[in-house]
Length: 238
Image (cartoon, rainbow, N blue to C red; front, side, top):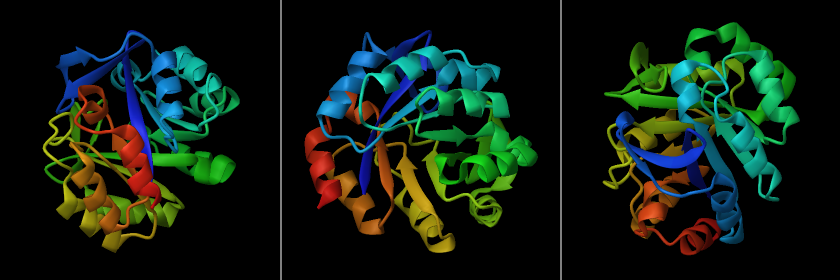
């Protein structure tokens, strides 16, 4: 299982939100580039970066910062937030991003998702952010009628190989990931599942590893010091 420390960006600065609430943000570092470098030095298998401003506006707001961070490290970077067009996807791939995450676009624009998968294959992931079991869009501000298990099955039929699952109610809370929903998802679809939201400590890492998920995204736990990133990486690799 790979560990993916997270860098969420607003106005070019790393922040953390509480349950996806844009009004409850906390600045957690001064520099995205320096943070990415620290994560790489700790042995992270991937760095997960999200343009929170872009997720809300549908434009590339923090893309230059993400690209700069990616170019400063040898560890691969996956990026999401506000990626709504093929031009956006091409831009990120051309600027050193290893994997592009589609969220709102995967819900609203299936033609784009199909085109992206045809062109880039496994370099396209879908971020499935859920509230009460239903996928959300537009920076988690809108809930869709898509139940997460049925949506995941549909994504896999389209050719999606990597799904990032977030239970919004857990995100930024340090209350542990939603193991029950992740287990259901793991049983239902044949895809790499990355768990996001709520990870607090090494016990959570061990629990996720026992489920057999592909990856674990760690944000607030790393910044607040409740999770030792180097040790989490070691456990994930065991």
